[in-house]
Image (cartoon, rainbow, N blue to C red; front, side):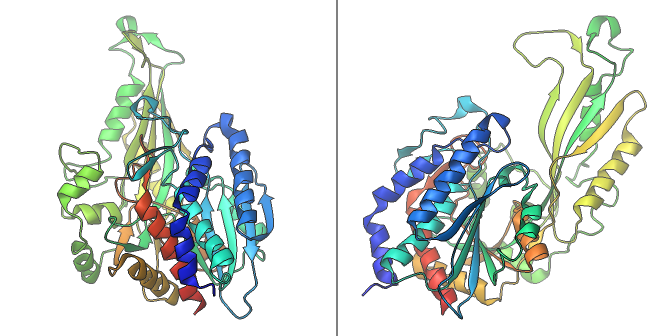
Length: 459
């Protein structure tokens, strides 16, 4: 008789096969932000289609958008049972700086218990874990015990600019009772956790323009204001000496963290030393004073400089006074902050502080995403909590995630459903950076956890 346990045993007996699938998936350079990889995005979408077919799904289709496609499929053979919408993304971040990778980011390499590749953790590993869980239940566990719809997109790493339109166009197709989003992580390989909050995101390019062209710094330096210097001054003024952001009104709508939550976050089993190791060992931590590093990275807003460009940045010397300078700026937002209002606050700061010796332009990149809070006491959250404890043998803790997943807010707004936010990435997986990896023992525990979750939801 096929049961949940036979499905789990099947996965345990086929680890090598599943690892090879993950290598195939991660080998596709599906970088959504670079136009030269458009064909790879399509190839990756077709790979997902093939995997869905082999997992027993039906009504499989590639849904085009104004840029990169999404993939849809469903399995609707459980009358009276809930319908879960599984979300994922198959696009990945660029690999720069390539010289810091110890192996080719698109030639997945297993070293010990880890598989190294771009997307291995974020989030091809999570997508494959979800599909393997459903496939095992379908073929070896007596059937998928509830109704499942799948939506896997190709634009998450560029802010999901077309996902809202796609959801509006296919609202009936995507109708469900709850969404499952495995794009998060756990505290450690031995301590599972449930994410109940995500920070939002606002992203901009700030351009500062001076003269019409680059100038000789000897002939004109000292008389013409350098845009790079102006940009540096503006950036420096965006934080005060205590790490607080100085944009006017920036904290007016920031959610105050209740004492109960502060006490719970303080009990999370993550030491400062471990956090620093996961953060690639900076010399010291820095952040808004009066808050712990856990609060700073989950419950407080940020303003970060993600990139800088100006003048001559090649090898050697060139005495140039640049005509322009640019900074890429991201802000992680907490509940009640509005991305549009934050843009206005940044504009007000620039109006008040930019000198009239230059001109400037603020360009929003992608669509802003508000922060998300999930009710920890709902049945779906209880189902994933129980599934984690059943697999790991340890009661999970609840945590706030510092990253942003725009689709969670979109699903709440457009489809009217809450999301269960889970995932099995580890803090040291190096997502978005060199040598991204997935911890394979935790990856396989993730597959088993998801099988337990689907069964729990059906019951």
